[in-house]
Length: 302
Image 1: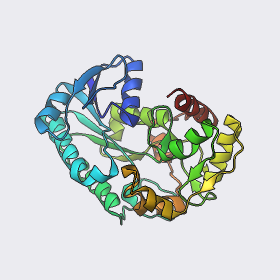
Image 2: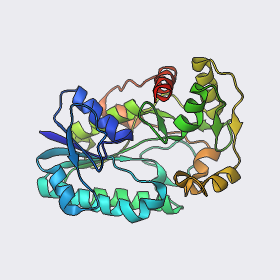
Image 3: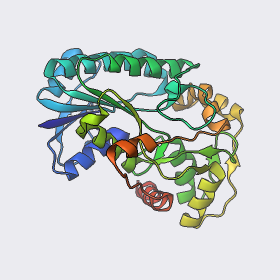
């Protein structure tokens, strides 16, 4: 049956659709303006329109909800998109797989596991927590895949991609919003997408929240040094003070609201995915060295 990917024009949604096509699956790639992987069915729909969302998922067995919007539009748009997706999936009896992040947990101490309590503090953290709860109330199977910061070809807008790999690929210095000697889990976009597909295909994922696998956690400084070795760039990285985010948000809407997530960059952000492999089996991930090289080639060719 058809697998539908909502938000297939960029980022995680596009990569999910691309891999499904490569697997020989029948894929309906839903976007507002196109830009889908070759081989997928091009379907245009506004997910803020319930009737259009229902049309988009007709005949689907699995619906991957991977659509996202800029930070300033989260509160106004994401709840409606989730409600419309739930209603449409329930109408056709399709499973929902939600490509989520880790915001719902709020500030944490120690590694994040699926048993970590959700204690959101910021507006966006609370919103993500509520969206997850709403999805788990659906009358159809739902699986939620939560991922740490990812980077990779097609991952436009990701912090490790835009602040580390892209500038280093172009011979510039890496930057980071916060201290450099803090452990942080960075994921590869292709691995994250593959994990979301596993959640869609396996009934054991139903009803659960899962952390998608990533390569070993390193400090930000270690990640930058690794990228430097791969790319032949020995320039000293810059740790940007919090005031830079505040100032930058005046000119770049993507930075608006990121200040409430400072704890993810100033304290260890270590994501445990052992439950995923314990349930679904060994999941090979892309080594950081290979992922950085692939991502750099993509940035250079863009």
